[in-house]
Length: 315
Image (tube, rainbow, N blue to C red; front, side):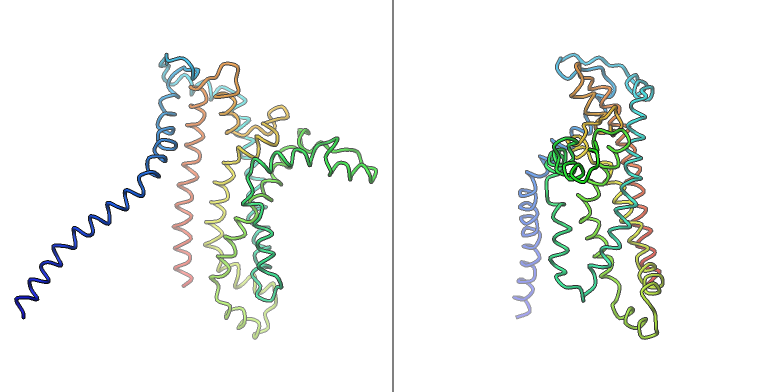
């Protein structure tokens, strides 16, 4: 009996690696299409952009003239690049505080178990997220049209003059920021709802028994417990605001007079919209912008680490 058991154990041990190898093989087979497509449309363009930033090339001819760091010098000397950089940062400053703070207030309301139709309300605020951003931009251009748009038509009926929301130099960027906040409001709301649901409800009940009011509950329970999530959600929101090409391009295409030209539109203009495309110049700007995003990504990793550490200290 003991000899037969030993033989059975040996066979089982010999078969385990083969079974694990087969399982791993099938996993890679199913992942292969994703890996190939990700490599072709993400990894390869990133690597190629570094090479293109060192050459002079219009994207059509086969000849690529190596110019070294000349493209980077031209980008740094171009005032429109720094203008697009300023617009990108200004857009971030308009969007991030509103998205983080307003969604926190809304999430606190929607997190109440006593609120009726809570599922319907959450879905209503999340619906714009699943709508295509480019479609929202096209539709909003019609809605905000200064002459035929429904909003200006209502204003004119009440005796007000038409407002050029997307054509005014001082209104275009704030209008785009408001639409961007509305479009992705539901994403940040979900973040906060997930964070709020980590707070034990018993803490609120015990505090109410001790006579704490709404402000005391928020100040001494909600806010301290949400500090780790505040860091993570803020950094995530900052990184998301750097990628708003589709909405901004369909709304204003960078106008009027470059007042809404973010870095992504600047890159697109040099690479595809110029009479003679300059892939080298556009790639150099893309590499610089990529370094900025990488720095934000590093801050994001730090934020996740800091959030976990704060969370551990609270426990």
